[in-house]
Length: 478
Ligand SMILES: *Cc1c(COP(=O)(O)O)cnc(C)c1O
Image (cartoon, rainbow, N blue to C red):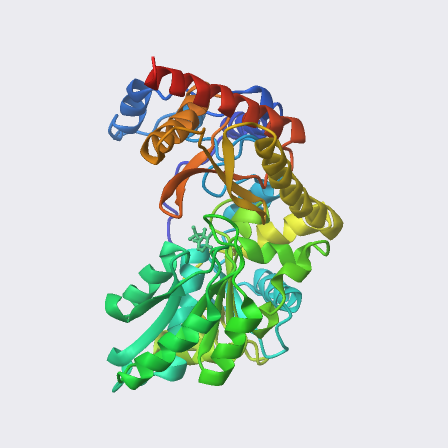
């Protein structure tokens, strides 16, 4: 017999203390957030003391370390606050917390089907369900990845391998637009597409890819000896919520026999909202699709989905089959997820989403998504009713952009005042409103996808932004 080495065990008392802390954190984060400032004062002293304090040779009490962790977790942007409108906010359903915690405790190895049959069946079912929601055919497949960046990367590997061989890979050209998310160009660089062959098609006045210009670029590149292999369209751009003309772009791809990847990391969730589903017309023609659940489906981070029209393409690109994994071959025709994407060992990312969708119900998911549209429309309405503010891009997919531009103020000064107004409202703790650029000029951006944000929150944010801008302007012109 082997002696089992002694190992530290959670005492029942320590476990109770830790669980009580977890429960109180859940209650604290679930309640009363809108009364709190959108940003807490950070304490560099606390961060330095706790994060830089070194590691002990002898273990410390669980409850004490957990309390330190809770303190550190407050030293951050509160992207889940109902008035956090910058970037893509991350309102999270408590069902996702609990699904994530239970998954972490069981820690299934979700790489291979036989290692985690229950979790694998849920992932396969959700992949099927989301493919149906996107209108993809029965041949479609995919898997959960850490987010939109990895989804874009995974899909573009399949696109490249479907079109290019060893001999012409260096000639491959891919098409994006000036509004495409930066993760797409990054993914293309990672898979060996040189910057000069990452081609940016122009956009129209609404910042949607110009499909006619795209076709012209592809033809010119072919004449120059390049091998166009993929077009990346965006369904819900991060900057302003624009949806590229998917049918027009799909027509170009069909005529040119190019892979159409749709980056729906932000906007694909609209497919689950019958009220706005028609905006995504043409999505069903995609060869692949990225879809983030940690954005508009209320998941904790690390939950994205990549779908491919012909799942065999993923297998062709990613299956490896080394000898030491022979035991993990599923015997019922199922595919191991490690053969469909870059990761071998991987967490069961689908479970928290499955739990959330079941706990919320699809009607509530649809209503929450529709609510985001209404919030951005309310913001646009309030801005149009406020003198000196100009809407830069109209409310679409829960995003509106705008700038402060009173008559007589030159563009550079308007840029400065606009940006300063956002800094001021954040410093006051009321709302986080992002700054961006639209058409080369500074604009503010409200991305309103939090289900608990109210129209009153939106109207008060606009009112205060206006007050902030006036104060900044007064400081500029004493
Ligand atoms: C957020 C986003 C991404 C990147 O996704 P991550 O989950 O942050 O990796 C890609 N594309 C679009 C359109 C996005 O909004």
